[in-house]
Length: 324
Image (cartoon, rainbow, N blue to C red):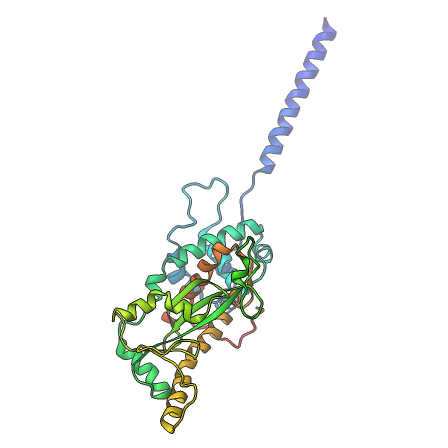
């Protein structure tokens, strides 16, 4: 009887020890996500090199765009702070590198980076009508363009640029193959005199011609309805219209040659815009490897951010090392 009692006590002691071990083990698996805040880690110059904006613009202009998109009522699942989420998205736009690399920079996984970039891009792109629009002061726009080559009543310069994407899956993949053989979206942009983006269309496959995109855009409808006054300047890929001025293919006299020179010099602003825009956000210069349905929102988000930088005069020095 005493022997049985001893065995029972021994078993109870072992069970209690096992419960204590399991309890300790469960406590050890709990952790708190402690992520360094880039606003505190870097000086303003270092921060701007990595995220393309100053800390002041980041806090006062960019954070309000998210509108609590990343805020959660509880800390269940250890959600990332909105500041870190915006920093991850900006770092992706500013490097154009693989999401795995962007995740390693912040100590997060590739799927997390993908979700953050998708949510942030869609939220920022939703402010399209607020930040991408023609100037309300048409006279100021006319004067800005006139100062470049004496071309009167120019309201904007139009052109398209290709943003490379990875090969889409499915039977429709070939419609995204452009004339150079790579896969892309053909993005239509209207530039202002100070390299602003006045209008953007980012949904057409790479094989579509510039003129076809314009003919099917709301921009053309606005000119047809006389909602916009003045001239657009485009290259020879567009048809010459009462509101769209293109170069004369074979000028016959001095007047036509002067027209061509003024038209080309004024239209040059849209080419410069593409260079500055893609240097500020190199993800547009390389190949976007995101899902096809997410690519347009990334492009538009970069356009919104670009215009914000111009509006608050938080400019990016294009000569800086893009690898920083």
